[in-house]
Length: 173
Image (cartoon, rainbow, N blue to C red; front, side):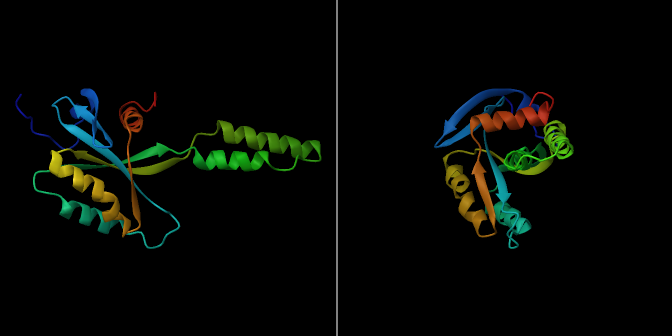
């Protein structure tokens, strides 16, 4: 099979996939062209002032070998966490003493359930697995990023599927 030139912004590799396989302890998406793609999410503690994402990107890119492919995806993803935390906290409040306050309390709970979810930005790395020489680099990313206040979470097959559904069909995700 002739290898096609990859253009920026193409989605063909995501849409036509063959499933998943295991590379060491990581789930990988097998593309239509037979390539294995590993996914990880980069995140940082928002309370830490010493987070330096630009330096992380520079270090990650300069540590790669020539010919390797890494794609950086920044998606806006619905984040139910803050809403659920508020709802749990509000349900623990003391019951209102008057009917007027009870109506306001019930209205507040109802509006938090029905209001659209807030969106958070997620940074995802997609690494086209080049062979055995790439696994040590991939597994070392956590240590490479940690010094800059950035953490890495390697994605499992269900998390990769959720990402693909969100990117290509957000109405069903």
